[in-house]
Every structure is written in structure tokens, then in C-alpha cells.
Image (cartoon, rainbow, N blue to C red; front, side):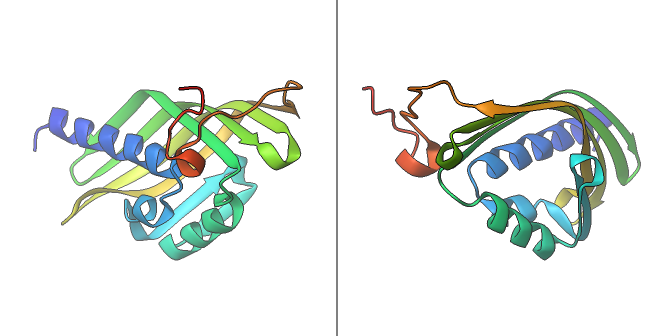
Length: 158
């Protein structure tokens, strides 16, 4: 593979990671990781080792269909060194917790390590540190009219 192809494959890997996280397909998301992956979320507040530990944590913490998330990554800085690579990403995320009528918004910097495997590039480590995070009540009267998990993405407005 050329350097361009490697970078493109790693970008697609990270984008898939975010999509699968937000659609709550945790087994497929964790399949993008090596077996002994390490994870540090929230600047190290949550530290996990192993694909199964990551899947178990996400299933426990985020599987509720009334917890809605959006993770958008951009501005990739990817360095490939043979069969390993590092990546830095800008993250903007929103979490809506309908049951608590809360919204969490934030921005972070992801620092990742990748390794080339027989199946292609996989995440060896992923973690982020917050640039900022804010939490507050949802605007009174706000109603969710569509959610990927709850309504299969179909809007009730149509």
C-alpha cells in the first residue's frame, strides 16, 4: 500500500469507529480493534484493556436507546511508519440523555495508535482528553423526533 492508501484506510477506520459507536453496534466497533487494545476515555478517567472489556463497558454505559450520541472527528494528523501508525483527531461530541433531560457537549483531542494486521489497519490504542465539556438541562419542550436506535432514523415529523 502507498502512504496515501494507508492514511485513507486509517481515516475510514476512525470514521467507522464513530459511526458504530453512535449506532450502538459495539461488537462491530470493537472488531475494529486488536484483541489487547487499550482505551483511555475522558483523559484517563476511564481506562480499559482488551476488546471484550471495551465492549462490556460501552454496552453497560451506552446501550440505553434513550441515550443519543454524536461523535464527529476531523482534522486527522496521521503518521505511518511501516506497519504502525499514530493519529491525532479533533472531536466534537453531543450526548443527549433523555431520561434525565440533560445534554452534554464537548470537544476533545483523540490520540490513537494503529497497527496493520491481516484484516487491515486496526486500533491498538484510542483515547481522548477534553478541551472542554459542558452539561446542562435540555431546553424545556424539546422533543426527540428521530433516533437511529429508537425510530430506525425515521422522523416523526414526516
